[in-house]
Length: 104
Image (cartoon, rainbow, N blue to C red):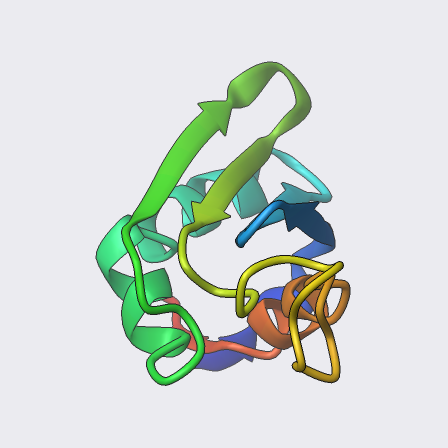
């Protein structure tokens, strides 16, 4: 069965200079196990192909059922110099929540 990440989690994103910071927080323990399995550094990098040009790093925060991603070289130099429409990366969490995954 295909679902979107938004069906099991919510998110928030913002800027860290030229890197975007994206947090995805599962609604429950089952959802956390699903996002841990499917939201790997490699899958997130592939999903943001053409947007993220640097390394993607992931941190797990099991106590709050969350994953935090740092998408390096994503914001066109950062909020004060970027010509991108979303220079602070505020829409990236919403975009990642729309990722479709296969679950049992």
